[in-house]
Length: 343
Image (cartoon, rainbow, N blue to C red; front, side, top):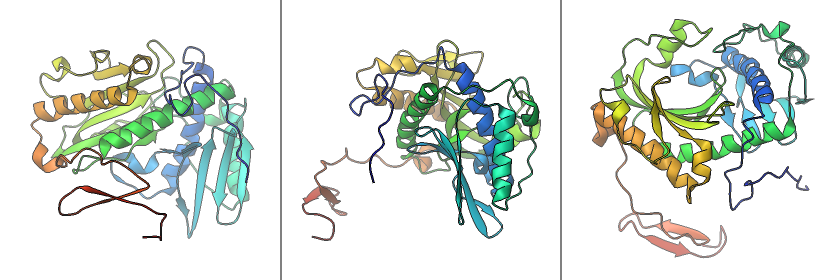
């Protein structure tokens, strides 16, 4: 096998993984891809077994793009992947692999191509062919307006997404209560993760455009603090966000870090512009500080049982050689040399 070179972008080398995102120009591509992901997400919603808070409908970041993961169809499994490196949509089942180009094409054409491809595999999946959580819900079959796809913009979106995914997974790892996976919600087109107190929440008032109230009621049926990353196309550009539902008294005035973070009254969220952390000497640490300080505010002011919900503090990461074993009694690292199977 030979490696395929990837497009190069400022800041995308391994030593500086937080790329420059061309958010002032990428709106046409982002808006089109948003609607494409809604079509794929609705297929997942139709096939996957239900799971609380709509976790079963989401997409997941991959080393190449986004995936539905395995979806059952009878006794078979099918998977749909967005590949933002080779710019393909890939449909895989136990019998064959279908691909179609990600290129400038209308939402209507994308919908027809995907549904025809699934039917050719013997998979018939009826979905409600209308987008949700957008101001103007043009049926997929009639949408010729959204038809843009710039490869560099799609690639940049993916590069920002996987960096956010990486740090969000790290943040979620030290919580032992109920917590969501890090997942991509195609309705709102953002990467999100939530932690839960274990208590029920008041009924959500709704408010998302073209989205039934009962959808929001299920999504927010338990007390939570949430974090996320949203690839915005308007000032200040892509951003990290955090909120608590229900919002406890004093939350908006809480002191959070880093300095570039602030509470946005219009959205009811703390926000941290992506461009601000790119200039930080340690972007990962800045994002983690934002997640941790906003969670601390929500959990403390909300009266969460933090002793029961949070993992105990562990020693700093041990030095890593080729292999490291942690002594289960002393909790100290013991380097081990040699390749696997040589011990």
